[in-house]
Image (cartoon, rainbow, N blue to C red; front, side, top):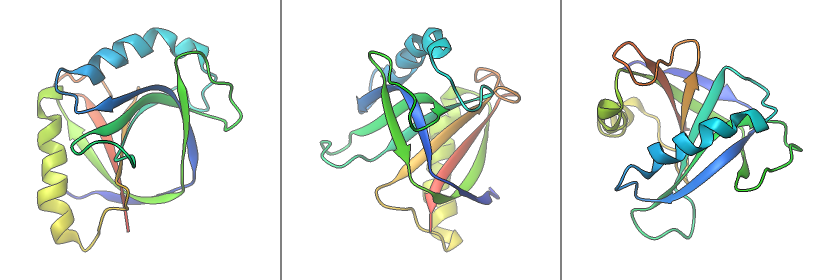
Length: 154
């Protein structure tokens, strides 16, 4: 695991929000609902979509917030049933996840348990992880698919 460290300016994501523990694959179901509505969004980058995972204040223990969306200008109107969030400028460690959805949690585990404790980096609090689905390399979690995981660090 050898991530690239990048600085990313503040950006805004528009899409669907889920809050919970994802015990019944609610996030996958949410993406399936969101995909047909992507055409309603004037994105700044049509090749990328985002899964923003945040430990939002006020949520019960073990729960998190996940936003499936696309990057937009800050003044983009919010279609019914969607939300818009602006993420602050941050420094990110960028990791590649190759392969299927069934091994995605393994990649997150390796980042948290193996890489970060030995890297000299710490997560920004509250924690923010961003999944970047780049149409040029993401193939729907097939074995050759690549997904980028951005972990906000300092």
